[in-house]
Length: 131
Image (cartoon, rainbow, N blue to C red; front, top):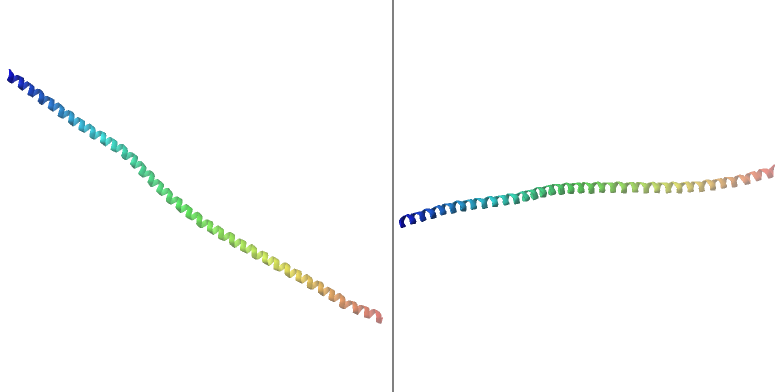
């Protein structure tokens, strides 16, 4: 009887050890699954952040190229405006030169008219005295 009780006790202990081993394996497996799920969840966030960073880098490069092109175009526009201003200034200089020439020519014309009239008057008065 004592022998059978000891055997029963040993059998129950062996059964409990098997159940504990099964539960331990299930707990380890569950903790591995949980760990894997957490890592996968974190990896999704990291992967999304990585993709966002790549997109931001690509957009930053495009923005830099656009800004560089805009700066070049603005520089060209400024050169065109400067050239246009210089051309307008030259036209103003030509206009002033033409006005100056015109004023000089009018002065010369007035002087010639006066000289002509003056030279004609003594001749006409000398002819009227002779007649």
